[in-house]
Amino acid sequence: MDDNNHSGAVLPLPQAPDAIELRHLRSFVAVADELNFGRAASRLYLSQPALSRQIRALERLVGCELLRRSTHRVELTLAGEALLGRSRGILAEVDDAVSATRAVGGELTGRIARLMEPMTNMAGSLDVQEMREVNESLLAECPVPSEVDTRAVNAGGVPSLVLAPGPDRPVTLLHLHGGGYVLGSAYGYRSLVGAMCVATGSSALLPEYRLAPEHPFPAAVDDAVRVYRWLLDRTPDPAGLTVSGDSSGAGLTMSLLAVLRQRDLPLPGRVVLLSPWLDLSCACLAENGPSAMLTLSQDYVRHYLAGHPTGDPLLDPFSADLSGYPPILVQVATGDPLVTEARRFAERAREQGVDVELGLYPVNAHVFHHFWSFLPEAASALSSLGVFVTETRRPQRAG
Image (cartoon, rainbow, N blue to C red; front, side):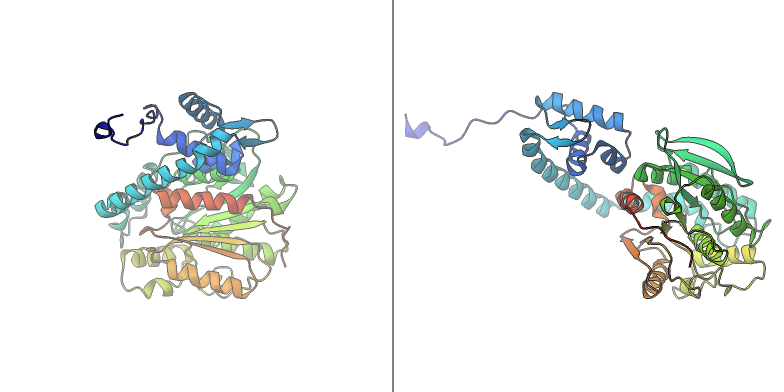
């Protein structure tokens, strides 16, 4: 051999097929992590058939079996083990690159700001109907997961929707929507609650509870109690129920718990509070100085309470007895004006012996979960919510 012509190079490995896409790798890694197609599908907001198709397509493209499936288990083949670590590295590098690019360009923050701008501009408006129309237009920008079916029900006299991520999924999730007790609708909230259904694998009840100023306190609380009792009548084990709420819906959730305790009714097994607005005195918000959110919140309080004191224990979880309450998940963005309020509530609940999980996400948006279709932090939050809801908890009773 002529040493002068020897480059020391090795033969190049064959290139991966061009048809392999990131979605194939993400699907494979999710199944490898969970070793369960159902859980992996929920994590990815896909149906199980769609996930199975992606795995089969990847196996055809690489030319070998990556996963062995049986009726009882899923396990990696040796080829799958070899692909897994490398796939994680590829996805991590891509995610880092995209995150860095977005951070520089401010694409996601700008997109959220553009969506929220019409609502922010309504601060100080006295036209409730116009505010409702603007809010519904905002919610209509959020997609409903394709695998979620919706049907109407009358739940204890309260018009409601049931959202189901698949057939034969029992209704074990009750969500009370936000909107300052003045805005919002079950129809408008199909996107967020549909994503929650996919994440938890549960069907959800989404009530059209009465809104202020036409129906001030305690109308919304009364409706929440009625739909919860309707669920109780259809649930063999109340510990399997989860009650969730976002923003003012989180406050309504805490009011519901207070009434259940007062009436010695069974508590749900879990509680989820998304970007919770719990302090109707708005003292926590006021600490941040004047803002559009403070102005809107003060208007909502006037409509909802119609002169009723904010210190009523049914309305103020900061003065209520929380001991004996079920485990609570609180999720909030670090850039949300309500983050301080959420932290204080979590601390107070823990002091009273409540099992509280506080999730903080680096986003500048209130109820950022609405943007799950394009915001990675929202998708991550919903995934964590799904884990929290599906964990086995011991039964809880009102104390």
